[in-house]
Image (cartoon, rainbow, N blue to C red; front, side, top):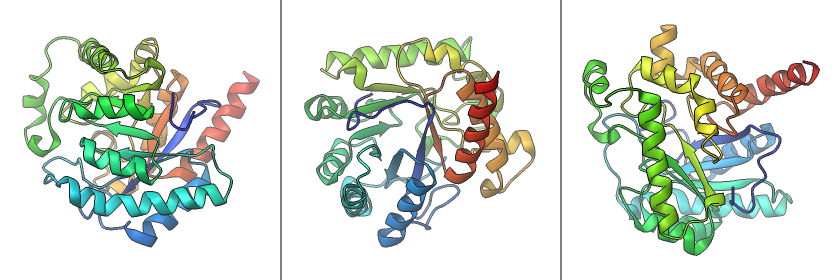
Length: 286
């Protein structure tokens, strides 16, 4: 996957969540300005190979944030982080911008980002695909059932939104989005796919998607899995506090890794890095 020619071995790589937002579901208001940069540095030292910077929450019911405000929240952080990475000689670490807006992505790329992570898979702003093609940056296409700002429906209502097999429905939708962005000139080797845990799916549908990670890997693109602290883990474990869902997040991500996921998007980098070190050691002896 292109992203400053990001190397995907040894997989999976950890993508650290850096929400420069006041309203994200588990860490809203924690990271902005210098504090955000310092947190990103700590994530890199703990083992993150991608820092995913976002200026708009995608939690259910979140308010939409216009492009200028997203840029204000993210561009300075990205520029400072890119400068630090160069000074540290860490050309192996990439910065991604978590946005559905081409203007925001363009500003991020100017500041040093080399991956666009779009939860709408370039459906909200088709110019994102053209931008990725023109700049030669990586592009993550995520599947979602609902725009998160409208995701206030019950789990039962959400289940009715996807007919038939959730795994095949998501795979077909992602394949179509890959074809669409490739037609815009995005190189196939620049594209990663994300089945979009959460984002309008029921608990049972999320579990089915995790257990079918290998199906998405077989599609031929790097697969990103982001279960970190999400509500379906809370529903399974009975833990209502997102910050206390670390162990559940690790368990889900290790299953995805065992099935070939190459990118894991996480809040808790050190805990995941330790779990992956043990997991790799055990697998090496198997």
